[in-house]
Structures are given as C-alpha cells and as structure tokens.
Image (cartoon, rainbow, N blue to C red; front, side):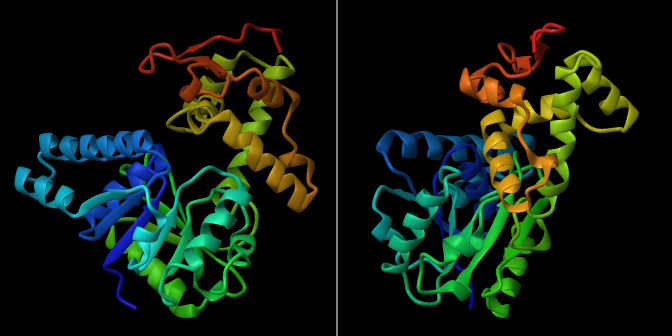
Length: 297
C-alpha cells in the first residue's frame, strides 16, 4: 500500500510536531481536532515550526509555502475517510483512543492503517475496538518531535507484515530512525527510562541529595543532556504517573510503582513544565529553578 494522504487526530504539542515532520516528508496532511480553538492553535504551532525552518535556512520560503499548502484542518472525523494512514495523538486515555479507532473503523477504507502515538498503552486493546486488527500499529514519537530522531514502531500479535514494513518505511521517509518493539507496556524506552526517573524521585524524597544536585550529578557524571527530575518535568509528571500505573498493572513489579511524591505532585496540579511547576519552577522556561526545599517531601 502506498501512503500519500495522512490524517493526524489531535494537534497539541505532540500532534503539531508530528504534523510538521510529516509535511517535511512530502505528504498531504489533514488534522482533526475537537474544537475550533484547539484546531486554530494547533495549526498555528505547525506554521510557527515551519517558519522556523525557513528562518534557519533549512528550507526555502517557497518550500515553506508548499508545505503549508499540503496542510488542511477539520473538526469532522468523517473528513479522514480517504486517508491511507491515520495517527492519533489524543489524550493518553485508553477508552478515548478505543472510541476514536472504533469510529474511524466505520468511516475509513479497509486498507487504511491506524497508528497510535501512545507511550505506554496497549496497541492490542486499541486494535480490538476495530474490525481491522491486522492494520493497527504503534508509532511512538518523542518530544520535541521535530528534533528527536527516534520512533518506536510497535507491533501486536495481529499486525500484518506489510503494515509493519509500511510503518518502518514511513518513519524513515519522514527522516526518523525507527526501532521495532512488541506490544508490551512501556515498549523499549519507557520500560527502561521509567525506573531511572522513579529512583531519582525516591532519592530526592529520602534526602539523598537536593533536586538540583541529583540532576547535576546524573547530567555531568553520565553525560546526560538533562537530569532525571528535570526530564520528568519536561515529559509531564501526570504522563509519567499514568504510565507507571499501566506498567505496574502489567508487570506487578515494584520498580514501576509510582512513588508517593509523584502522586502528591500530580494531585496538587504540579505537572511539570506545562503547568509551570513540578520538581522545578518553570516561570522562566529558559532558567528553571529547583523549588522543592530539602526535606519538603
């Protein structure tokens, strides 16, 4: 199957980045959002991202115009009926994703591939909400999408070989490096990364060192671009908390049990960068400052 027309459902921070890289790959893209405001904001993010490429000289102004000419938006799910591939980037809740795929299943042509950008939820469970279990796959991009080269391609027991190959080829065609993973909670990256971040939270809560010093130690001692607590803020503490619950339920392994401090932070609305506060105060996103005093946990 040749992929020419791509639909993206959800145009938030992740969705808009996904749209941008697909446009850069030369595809026609239609974006579907739930409200006019969300759609307008999402398209504006895409336009801003494309404009940055032009300003940096990565593409010409003509290329920029041509890319945006291949982009359209809609509030109507039925407008996705002619897409060859549809990628969902909606809220990280399994029932929402299942309902979306079930709706799309009744609209789209039989050969359309459905892909989920989930970081930890079951692709198998999503596929079970459709009559095309063999044509459902995971395409997990990483934030910020235009800069991060990795895409996890996730296959289920039912995913057809041509769909797996098509997903791998598609990822390469938009300039990404795909890795193939089976459908298990956390896939590859989050399976290994989550215990690392949770251990850092335990260390901070137990007074091993301050938030700033834990991050500084891991950044400089292991040559990481940022420490685990700042990374957790960047990802979103609510996203990590939900992913922990999914992985703990699947593996019954204490390494994935969300620590009390993570639960408390989420409960009071301290979700990290997107809320302005997590383990850091993000009032100035360019100069985040650890805000949790020693012993405050």
